[in-house]
Length: 177
Ligand SMILES: Nc1[nH]c(=O)nc2c1ncn2[C@H]1C[C@H](O)[C@@H](COP(=O)(O)OP(=O)(O)OP(=O)(O)O)O1
Image (cartoon, rainbow, N blue to C red):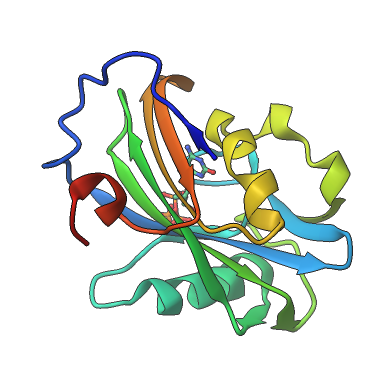
C-alpha cells in the first residue's frame, strides 16, 4: 500500500540531503506503546516517541539507546529498524529520521527535563497532539510493517507526501540504496 503524491513536489528528492540525522523509538508492551510528551527541542509540546539527533560518530542504533537513557532512563533491548522518514521542512533544518521498534527494555520509564513518559493504548494514540505525518505510518508500523516516508512541510502542515510500506530506505525512490 502506498500514499501517492497528489501533486509534484518542488523538492529535488534524488539529491536531497537532510541537515539533521535523527532517531525515534516506539516500545510496545501488550496493546500499549511508550510515548513521550516532548518538553524540549524540535517538536516541544508534542507527543512523540523518545528519540533525538544522532551525534557525530554515532550510529543510529547507538543514538536511539542513548536518547532513551537520557530522556526516560530506560535501555531498549533488541531494537529493530522499521523505517526511515525524510522531512523537508520550511522553517527548521531538514531531518532524516531512523525509526525503531522494541518490545524489551531495562529500567523504569521516568520523567526527565526532556520528556514525560506516557504508556498509551494503541487505539488511543493522540494523533491530534503529534506531528501530522505520524498518522500516515505509525499505525502500520505498530502492526509490523516496515516503511519509507517522504514529507514536505510548510510550517507544521504537510504539503506533499509519499509513504511506502514493505521496504525501508532511500533506495525506494532513488533506484539504488
Ligand atoms: N515531522 C516529524 N515527525 C515525527 O514523528 N518526529 C519528528 C518530526 N520532526 C522531528 N521529529 C523528531 C525526530 C527526532 O526524534 C526529534 C529531533 O528533535 P530534537 O532536535 O529535539 O532532538 P534532541 O532530543 O537531540 O534535541 P537537542 O538535544 O535539543 O538537540 O524530533
